[in-house]
Image 1: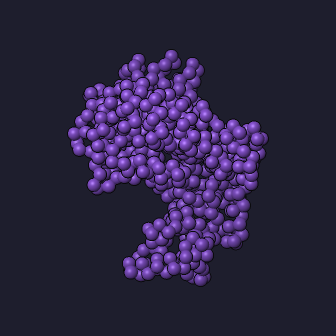
Image 2 (image 1 turned 90 degrees about the horizontal axis):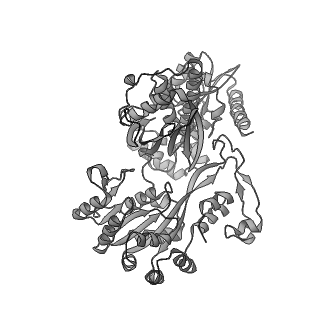
Image 3 (image 1 turned 135 degrees about the horizontal axis):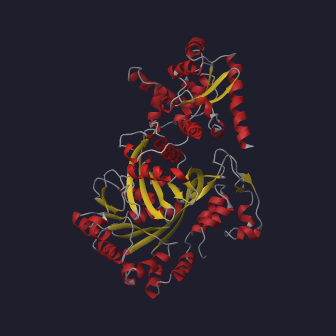
Length: 606
């Protein structure tokens, strides 16, 4: 149903555009005939003021700047530079000015792959255009820049048809390009079949290669490029290529959940595995031992690192690729979504002169992102920050980052000993995983350093038990540890297809809520099978939930008596600590997630 509505939305927008134009939208000719200057249309600035995106004073200020710069720079660019508006506001304004439809989303999975048969992916990605539908009157094309009339003329010549434009955001068009060209590749492969590439003919990508423009004809190369390109387009964190007895499964981990996206015929398993191992600079002649490698590549102008892990299994090598998008940068700590009370307390901890601040949670819970944002929050020219990580996932400007290399003898403990001689003010340890590292971290905190690190524990209180297991004495814990932050990433319910729901008092009680607390609130559940916007999952995107244990006097006194996590947790909750479940409940009451997801992500003993 969602797909049908999305398709109808495209055609409805197209019909409105055709009626408004009185017929064709033919690129240069149409633009010349309907120029705003010629017919006295409103300027982009006036449209933005009318839509309350900017004020009249802000527009006048932008016009003054334009005049001072000689009139060469557009008002829209000046407003963007001043961070008064976003790129999509410009697009919507241009669409109104040019009387073109603007669509935030497209029915990506319903675009006929045959529409791009005569187009190259490089042409579409460079010009950010993609055909989305065809009828008797012409072809509807999604464009990101409605003023790029040269591309429209090229499309009219290539497709031999009248072109109707629909304005869309860049991300929407890139997703459509990836989807439609992938299905075009699959259709071609279904007709031609994968060829049995010889290993010697395969060549690895170098760091400058843009995978979005990788149009090599070898089907195995194209297959691997398509898988990685699609994973990055769908914001997957991991790619799993898993061999079974009769097939090879390809699964993506998106928003913490795995889903199968395609299968590869068993007879091509060796070729695909070899291709990936060559890209990751692994030994293709060795398939009996685990191997790790890394691929540096670009996809649509975005720099990405892909960590490759190959593991021998009964039916062949299992490959997992972890995708690290370097172009996304580090989010501001203020934008991490922490409740104000927790944010203020955590901010005070990371501004301390010495001590240990820990961030805990399972793999993929957002620990590294939280610590990276914390470092950038306190990073100043007069603060010397050094990290030791395995591996360095995010490049932090102004921070000295050391990558663990166990083969060369550079372990966490060895690296930590060395960096303490570098006169650091703040030290980040990627993970405290053994007693030696734990002891050095304690010594660093005792000698006037602020130490940030991670632990793999389920909640804040159990971190004390974990440190004791690693050989840290209770008196050392109480004198060095300042606080522990537990973090999880919880899926957001899809805003496009979420459904209103109600819950019984018994169900609400599972999350510590009462009917009075949710009175007047809109509670949602995920739609079964979702919609095209969320890839039929029902959830799209993730939000953080947090639990902060600050080591106050009462907490320290309890640790000296016992390092039992359960007892410590009860004391902390009695003193008003916001738990992970409390944080999840707040997200649920605000309509950001569902009851099922909140309970699933907070499976701790309350």
